[in-house]
Image (cartoon, rainbow, N blue to C red; front, side, top):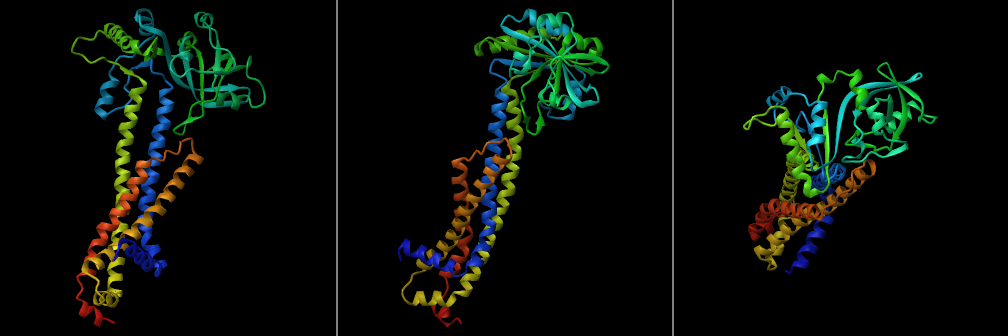
Amino acid sequence: MDRGETFKLAVDALRAHKLRSFLTLLGVIIGVASLIAVVSVVQGLNQYVASRVMDFGSTSFQVNKFSSGFQSIDEFQKELKRKNLTYEDFLAVQQGCAHCQLVAGVYVDQKTIHYKNRMVEGVQLRGVTVNAPFIGTAMELASGRHFTDADIDHARYEIILGGDVADRLFPSEDPIGKDVRVGGNTFTVIGVAVKQGTFLGSPQDVFARIPITVYTRFENVTSQSIVIQAQAATPADMQTAMDETRVILRNRLHRMYNDEDGFAMDTAETFLEIWSSATGSIFLVMIAVVSISLVVGGIVIMNIMLVSVTERTREIGVRRALGARQADILGQFLAEAVTLAAVGGLVGILLGVGIAFLVAWLSPLPAAIKLWSVALAFLAAASIGVFFGAYPARNAAKLDPVVALRAE
C-alpha cells in the first residue's frame, strides 16, 4: 500500500468519527495555539521595548545612584548606602568630560499640580537643566518653548507640562501663559510636550519640568540623588565619554582603586539586557506550561487510537487475510495518529496567529509572527502524533489475524 492510499484511509477513518476526532484535536489545538501566541506576544513585546528603548540613542547614557535592576535584596540594601549624586557632581561632569557633547542634570519627585479648581495628582516633577530635552529621546513640544539659559540662570518660575497634565488641567483652553500651583509655588506655563502615550501600560505624559535652580530652592535636594544624563558626539566617542565620566565621579566620591564605583551607568543596551534577562525566564516558564498542553493532547490521541484499534479488530483481521503486512497496518494507524495531530497543529497555528493579531489590534505591541515558531509548532504537533501513536499502531500491527477475524 503506497503512502497516498495510507493517508487517504487515515483521513476516511477520522471523518467517520467527526466529533470524536474534533474532541481529540482540542488538546493539540490548544497547545499549538498557545505556543504560537506566546512566541508572537513575547517577540512583539521585545520588538516594542527595543524600539522604545533604542530611541534613547546609541550615543547617550545616564548615571544614577541605583542600578537599573537588582539581583537580590542584599544588593539593593548595599546600594542604599551609596552617597547621593549632587548638583556639583553634574557640574563637574559638564566641565570635565571632554568627549561629552551634552550633559544634563535631572531631579525627580512626585507632586500635585493645581489650576483653579482642578488638580492632577502623582505628577512626576522634574527639575532640569537646559540640555535635558535634547539628550536621548528628544522631548518635542506641541506648543510653547523650551527653557533657555536665562530661565535656568535666573531661576524663573516657569513650567513645561506633559500632554496628559495639560489636557486634564486645561481641557478647553490654551495653557500657555496660564499660572499653575505646585506645592505652594506659582509657575507660568511656557510649553506643552508632545504626547508619548504609554510604555508597557505606564503613562509617559504625566510629568512637568521646571528649572533645576528653582527645584533646588523648595526641595530638600540633600536627601535626593540627581540623575546625570550625557551624550557623546558620535558612537565612537561613547565609551571614552563614559570612561571620563566614571573617572570624574570616582574622584569626587573618593573611591579607592579596589572600590566599586558607587553609582550605576546605563545605556540603551543596559535596559535591553535587563529586559531580555527578565523575559527569557518568563518565556521558558510559559513554554513549559504549553508543553504540558501538548503532552496532554498526545495522551488523548494515544487513548483514542487504542480505542480505535479495539473497535476495528475485525477490520484489521480482514486486511491481514487479504495480504496486508504488519508494516501496512502499522503505517495505517500511525498515519491516522499523525494526520490527527497535524490537523490539530494547523488549526492551532491559525488560532494562534489570530490571537497574535488580536493582541496587536488591542495593544501597541506589533504582531511578531515568526516563521520558525510556526514551523516548530507544526513539527511539535506531528512529533506528538508519531510518539503517542506508535504504541497503538504497534498493537494493531501485532494482532494475530486469526484471532482478529473471530472478533465481533
